[in-house]
Length: 164
Image 1 (cartoon, rainbow, N blue to C red):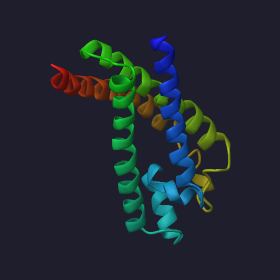
Image 2 (cartoon, rainbow, N blue to C red):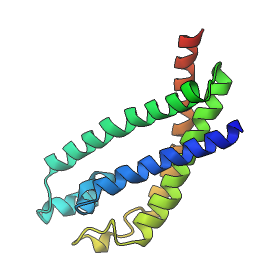
Image 3 (cartoon, rainbow, N blue to C red):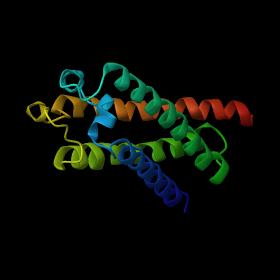
Image 4 (cartoon, rainbow, N blue to C red):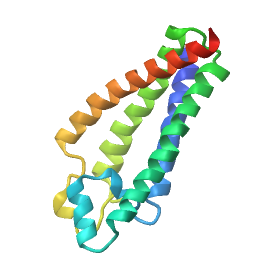
């Protein structure tokens, strides 16, 4: 039963990621250009579609909403809803929820939505496609997986201090 809850919570976090991305590109993909390579960002600036300052502001807003929001979400799910206590119990639930979100990000958002639809296209940058290169994908898979494990270790360790 707990495994099913963790899966559902992971899907919920993946949905929140999707929602944030959808809001970010609601007026066009330039709203999330901070997630693109520096080459795409520079082209958008050169084409006067936005400025470097706007890209920086959007990046800061995105990070200041997403990271704390994700951490609060997984901590509430793991400790308040699921009642995890101890390092291992917290770690596997945190890692499970974050890993499911990472899978959604890699497969559905990056792989399908960005890679196979026009929703993330930015006029004047079509020659720079694919926006997420094979090397980018490799880095995202490796860093996403390692990152989720490191975050899970850190959050579980911090929560152990609160409960012990």
